[in-house]
Structures are given as structure tokens and as C-alpha cells.
Length: 249
Image (cartoon, rainbow, N blue to C red; front, side):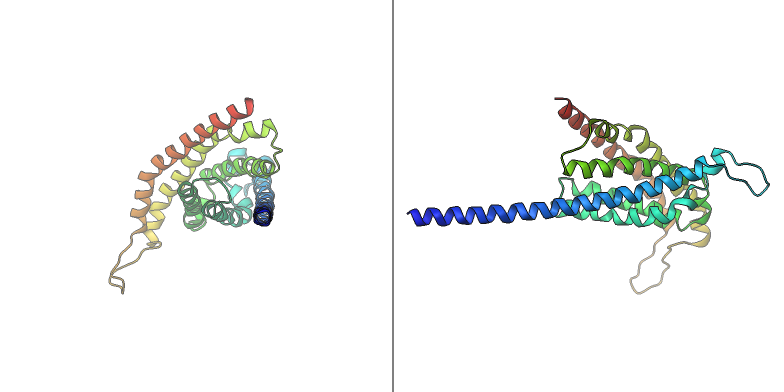
């Protein structure tokens, strides 16, 4: 009986050590991932602010105002935005594999929505890159992510300062609607170009017997977008109440 108990204790200790090691590796990986994203989005924000705040001369020799400079943000920041937005696909995998306690479907939809607007719309339709909407979009994303990723990284270390947590669950109130409005404006403004060049169209006849009109897809997304945004927005308010109340208590 004593040997049996000793064996059980040994097995339990071994399982416990294996679990602790696995948890430590996951935490180490998540810390590294969030630090990399923090640095990436800091580069995005720095390049965007540089475009907006530093005076520049126009082709006509006069100094541009901040509204005109806002239209140059995409040119200055896209080299950073694209790789780090695509890399954020990892967050949907973190949810799928249970590394984080995030709902899978919302994170998949959010990644698809943002990446579609960035890569399929803005990056593919050159005139959109020099618009106010593109500038506002990049700034909204960058400010949000420059708070979100450090918050996650410090959360893994149980070292999140109250002010950072407050910013994480407060800045979204103005930034999410501004970002979503910019995304919708970019999609809407792309439709004329999409129709003109038949971008991403699939014509019949073909082997799959399938036709695709991307402009109609954009119309459909524009109809669905406000509902998807509302769901995410209200979820964030729920999170805000929960996180800030818990910390105050």
C-alpha cells in the first residue's frame, strides 16, 4: 500500500512538473510575441506621428497643414503596418490552442476584417493610400495596439500598472468607432475603382462554374460591418466593467 501511494505521489509530481514546464514555455512564448508586436506597432505609431507632426513642403513650395500631412501617413507607415497586422493571425491560433482565454470566432473575424481592409482594399487601390481615411485608420490602429500589446506582455508578468489597464479599456471608446468608420469609408470609396478594373472578379464560364463580383462582396460587407462592430464594441464595454471593477476591488 505504501509503495502504491509513493508511486502515485511520484506520478503526480512528475505530471505537475510537466504541466508547470509547459505553462512556463507558453508564457515565455506569449511574452516574446507581445514584445515583438509592441515594438512593431511602436514603429508604426512613430512613423505615423512623424508624417503628421513634422512640417513638410508641398510641390508648390508651401508648408503643408496637418490635414494634408494626414494623407501621407500610409506611405510612411505601410512597411511596418502590413507585416505586423499579418503576424497578428497568430492571436487566432493562440485562442484555438487555448494559450489565451479569448473567444475564437471574434478574433478570427476581427483579423479577417482588418487584414481585408488593409491588404485587399487599401494596399491594392493606390488612390486610397493618400486619403484622410487611410491616415486616421493607421493612427487608430497604432494607438490601440501600442497600449494593448504592452498590457498583455505585462499581464503575463502580473505587473500591469493601473494607468495602462485604464488606457487599454478606455481608449477604445473613441478609437474603435473612428477606426471602423475609416475602414467602411475605404471599402466604400474603393467600389468605383473595383468596378472599373474588375478587380478580383471571376468570370463565367470556368471549370468551377462559379462567378464572383468583388464589388457586390464589398456591398455585402458594408451592410454586415456595423452589426459586427456593435458586437465587438459592446463586448469591450463588458470587458471594461469587468477588468476595471476587479482591479478597483
